[in-house]
Image 1: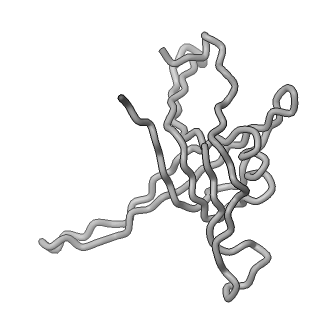
Image 2: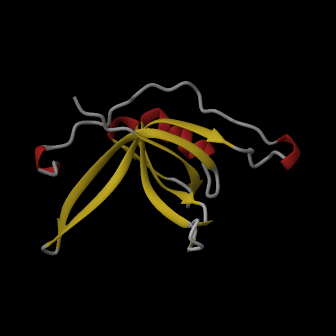
Length: 141
């Protein structure tokens, strides 16, 4: 048995980039920052805040939700699986690790709300949606 599951809550680094492929198949990509708070260890050592950046990929309905509602600075909950892509350019092999979103929930206040009306905003119910199959030459192994 194996499990590939990522659960992230963080802030969006830039507006999603959305493309439409053949047959109106939407794909959205955006970066998400998660941070570990700064802290002081019992021995007095100060550990500074550490921010990790994640590449998020959403397909179909989730991509359309990202296009309509997600903006730079939005706080979101993303659940999905980790995947690594490889490609070669100018003889150099490149790698990119991404989280393939299966669920996205919008958190925090909407841009049109004041701070006093902040609350949780969830995306419409979603189900796990697989991306289209890759051509064999796109596989990382």
